Length: 290
Image 1 (cartoon, one colour):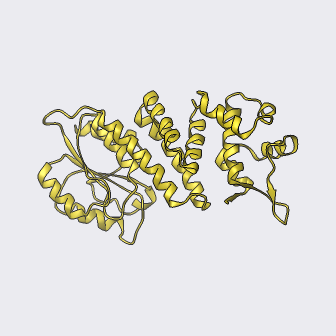
Image 2 (cartoon, one colour; image 1 turned 60 degrees about the vertical axis):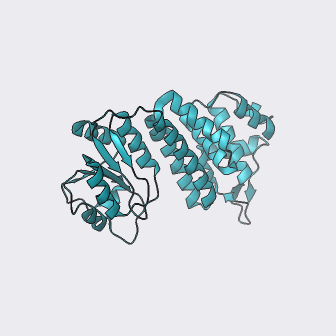
Image 3 (tube, one colour; image 1 turned 90 degrees about the horizontal axis):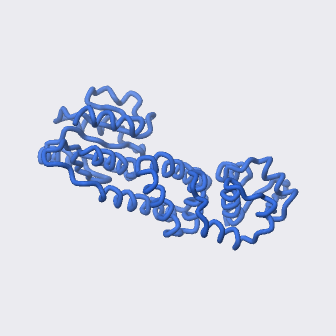
């Protein structure tokens, strides 16, 4: 069983510390354990219950009424009503689905959000904040790799399905090669770029993750693209500058890059390399080149 401090519960649920203390003294649903030095801590089940309670309170349920509900009743209300219409609620639902590895609930939230707001807004307003919360849990050692891989695969599957709905580019459309170099495996940001480029009419040669740089050069010869794009998320023993210099040694194509900006300090001296800090910058660059 995992345990959580009050500060961690506040971060994960959005419920303020003074509210938790007030609920503890007034209601019976919240009874944190205490250490030998009288410091509160919370269990997995309490975290899940508080995530659900946070959803209910944001949607107008009075805490005095929630106090009289059983966990089963709370779960039934969450599951049977359409109250998940706010990003905070959806993120809480995604976290709960990840912890319990509930594929259908997780996928339904993604699908409904994409249908209502599109993939770009869903990624920036829902998926990225959710992944930040996953990172918080990871840092607390509350998420195992299998859970993280499970939800990442579900997100990528839904992104691929949305991309597949886009029409094929017109004959003669500008082409771009998108890839992650060796030792890079975090693909969600690049999939969003894939969607953006396809929606703008580009022909995208999407090579996925962990691609050797010499293969990129061969694909350039075959496809004759107007640009390249990659992301650098995972620092490793090979400096980014070396990777970029090797990749661009035989081409003058513009190279769009994104990722943690600290990885690019003192690395972007080549005029071919254009750092993109957000999806809107990619849209601008692609429209300029098209």
